[in-house]
Length: 273
Image (cartoon, rainbow, N blue to C red; front, side, top):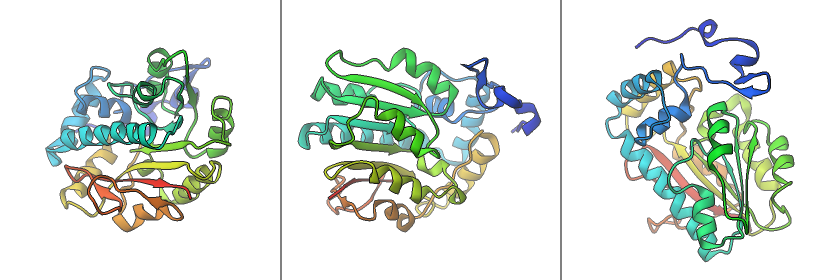
């Protein structure tokens, strides 16, 4: 597997995914969103993403099934919160490339007046999102280009569309495990949940480091080829993100942070009391 050096990945504005204010794509390095699209069977990926994706999948043959399980959990969680708990506002951070059953589609099918803000720093996602993430006229669907490491900017921009005096579902599926420990992921999640009122929810899917031994090799391979490194965590570490929240039954009957069907991730839904 060939891995590009940092110098080959570009520098300056282009390395940050910007050129003259417009998103640009580095097609010499595997991109997390495009690799994810490849594993889901999508077409918005390049040869470097497919090559990297195949190499990681050699260590984790069941990876596509696990990823599809994550998407199923996202759709079911959004539907449950909209249909059973009356949530009409969703802040979806790190949504990845648009695919079938996006958050706004599920929420607005239940309640057309639902308001959704997507947030992602990836230039690939930004380019696709502005073109494809369109919602119902009765509600609102907006996209904010920002990094999860900057929660103040996210909250400020999202407040243009969302009313933070009313309950909000903060959706963090397969994004927090890209935040390394030195960037204080727990503090970031606390800041986001501190900004929403009681009755709000946290929806999370987070890679698990302690479920299957082959995940260690898969993670190592991924970190060698991807532009963003993974930091999978244990069940105890993931559960800490829900401190102070009431954890809902995720469908496995234990009311705890649960495992995905293919045992790649932990997932959970927490309600702010």
